[in-house]
Length: 371
Ligand code: SMG
Ligand code: MG
Image (cartoon, rainbow, N blue to C red; front, side):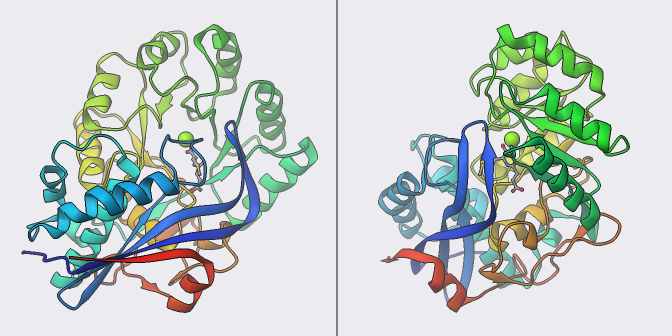
């Protein structure tokens, strides 16, 4: 199959979150991202680049991604037809970094491939599940009372596992509080790299709480320190920011820097690399789960399909659409079922329909790039 890419429309969107989302690196009230509309021979594929408004989670921002897409990656796809989404890796050639920008464009090509072949993304990936178990990620809350109310509300909605965001000074006490109130609830924490190895005693104390996992406690470039920390704990460490490629995953497993991996297709530069990380972990018996970047319905559809692969053994941060936005830019909305799962879309490609009016309503700037 050959794709000749005729044009790409970039949309910088800003969507108001239902509630502010606070992590160790800052608070987000709005979610910025770039929506990509890629036209190829009468078909339109959609992608989402999850780089946000400030370099908190990643060095990439919506503006850097826009620049990289417009000036380098998109011109590279205009050069000649592509045989498959995986072809992008060679097409990008010597360009370094910017995985979030790459992944956004790659996603639109997967959508196109599905549309052209009338197959769902899940089907193309060889997924045989109909739905995937999900959890919810709870940001740092203003007070203990609000934290308990927030968790209660998600539990009432049926989320079977909760992730708590932590940072120095806002950790053990809050986790203990939630655990005391919901002793049966599977809990995990995410520090977004806010600690250093000399704070290991915090995690040794946390080790007693029987958490599912501790996500990204140390720096993104601290693989070695994660392995030193893991050696002091029974609770599995899970890496997020540190794993930006298959090579990182292999090296992390080799030095026991983590025992679980959070896979985000965006963070590793696209679905192709995400599948490679999944396959490596599956071969090593290392459980993975699907991370989230507060995606719109576009990115969420891809996450649901990816999370259907057999190595995804833990609930993902792929919550229902109504966890995030009052009005999404794509339909259908994804709903939490009574058994704590969300259905994987079955329509061709991503299986979604982008709502042009809703998209226009949240678009700050738009640019059409032609071959
Ligand atoms: O999409 O539900 C979601 C958010 C999940 O906590 C979440 N993501 O480090 O894992 C993580 C954070 C990054 C969010 S930055 C916008
Ligand atoms: Mg994380």
